[in-house]
Length: 158
Image 1 (cartoon, one colour):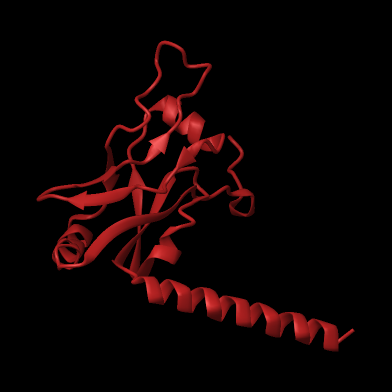
Image 2: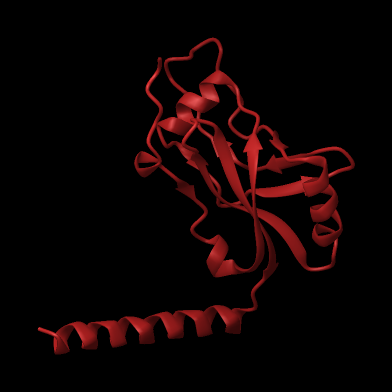
C-alpha cells in the first residue's frame, strides 16, 4: 500500500498580495482539474497566484491567470502555463457562491493552492472586496504597531 503524504509536510502556494489588496468575506475550498505535468510542476512549487481570479457560469467555476510553469521532463506532453482550469465544487456550493460573487464590488479570488492529506490538489477561494488605499495604509500601520509591542514584550521578559 502506498504511503500517504502527511499534512504537516504540505507545501502551500500562497497569493501573498490577496490579504493586502482585499477584505476577505468568506473562504471556500475547491478541487482543481489538472493534467499530469501540471501536478508535477505544482508539487515542485513552480506556480503563481498573484493575478488569478475565478468566474462562475451556470454549471461550473473556472480559474483564470493561474500560472503553473511547464515541467521540463515532460517535453512532448507539457501543458499551457496560463490555460483556464476548471474548479470542482458541489452544485449547492456553486448556487450559494454565484449570487454573492455577482454583487457589485465582490470578486472570487484564490488565496492558496495545496495538496491535502489524500494527495489531492485543492484551492482555497475567498469572496473578497477591494481595499481602498487608506485601508491598506491603516493595516500596515497596525501591523507595525503590533510588531513594536511584541518586541517590547520580548525585551521586557528577558
